[in-house]
Image 1 (cartoon, rainbow, N blue to C red):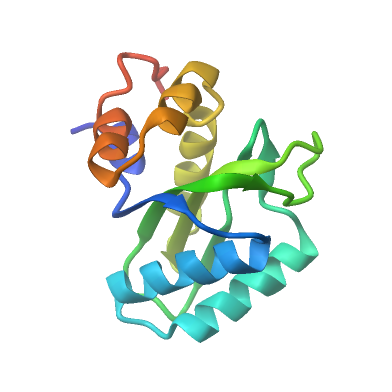
Image 2 (image 1 turned 90 degrees about the vertical axis):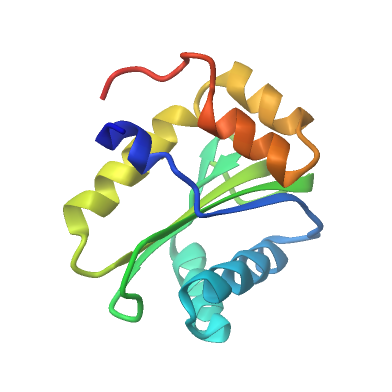
Length: 156
């Protein structure tokens, strides 16, 4: 598998998270990531809230990519989630968000972390792909779409 595809692998996939606001979304992804990495969810949640308060992770077109680099994790984890309804996350285009990709990396992975963010951002800017992701109602369907987006990926 080439490095482009490896950067687009999601360890955790959460379909249709029920949330009324950004705090609830960050709490849900913190819990899932903490289980995957065996770390404290409350510390992760607090770090995500602080980062989001300083700068919105919403990149437009209904997509947000919260991310952290921290000394508190030993390996990277990526999470993909859809929301049961779109919420306001202060996106530059003022559109509500209903697709979330969360990237968590050890502090030592600076360049790799940035490359992963760039590739995930490019991947999720595809409107046709996002429409298919919105239609998916369960983890298996989301994973199938994410694993085989029908050739929409561009070379890195």
